Image (cartoon, rainbow, N blue to C red; front, side, top):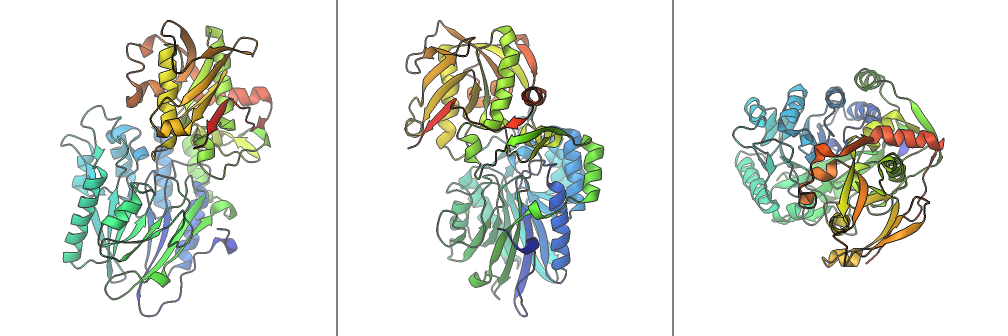
Length: 520
């Protein structure tokens, strides 16, 4: 993936229909590296002046509810000539009304083939004025290309709507909708169809869609943050799939957070079918690009000047996302230690956050404000002191640990003031999968043990948690009867993390064994 200054040079072609595509996915409102994406896009446009080209995204361009940040991302993507995007789950972090406001500022279109929009939902305005469409046909150099777009079927994407919740169809209905739309397009003479997908690279996502649909040629993917380089007919990241009518479908995905940008160059035969040995797909690392100066000015005006918080003595550079979400995370440890320190004033014994609250936790030579506030801890949730019975405490740990074997990504709990073990086998079997739960005393010794199979309902554990956990629909029964408004607030995530790092004087990414994950 380390190409000679990351070029985007198309393959030679004189007779066949050709399309070159610059693609991205799961930017997550990134402000750290998005300027490099813009620079790469300009080089793509320059090197593909003579080819038919598209600039596309597989969803999750935005993240969170920060209006200034999301507005800046829209301006930058307008500058970067983005044309079409799928709708990811994070597009709706602020609810449909907030997303609708972002759509109206965008010069690119969002495509929602499988989106279910209730009559009174604000997104109907976007459907009416066609800034949000079910499908779209675009003419490029005399050739028609169609674009479809799907949102994730595995997420309650409209969860934050107060009412009239938007949703995505089930995967089965999504496949039916894709086939129906593709059939309609082909009857109109459009036989080159691209799907922008935020369903994810797995069997219950893009792989199944590719196999069970007909008419789709290209899937620009997202959601699972998968790094797919090249054209692979087999192996762990097989991405050249045979469709329902035995035609090739190429699946792409470019990781997340602007680590890479993707370049796809394909040729079609006269029947509108991909020519297999003329599919060129590669991921280009953005490390070799400088940030666009205009982007830097947009960001400075929107979110302020960047600044160095600390030098990094021991970096954390995970090679895969599961190093952050499926095992002890040394970046998250700083936040948890700071949470517990603040909570101890109120008698807290442990602190807990769900794994995705610490998002892209990679740390290089320096730790900056942009790293912390707009990449690592973007949600900046409130931190609450809460008393849970041992039964509630074990249920919370176990419910989150069970997700370590799910397709949707681990929600396991990072922690401080304690240690525990997760059994993947027990999680896979649907059994209690947390064990060896031990809590430290005031002197830092592990003196309290909790039996996960027989927790004591009469004893409590005083915890510091982020308020997201109390809003997660799956966890509501655990917190039933607890009034959030009466809980002690000890700060917000970003300030606590920065405070803890500054107290330590530098950043050292070290694991200390507070979480053990047993493999299958």
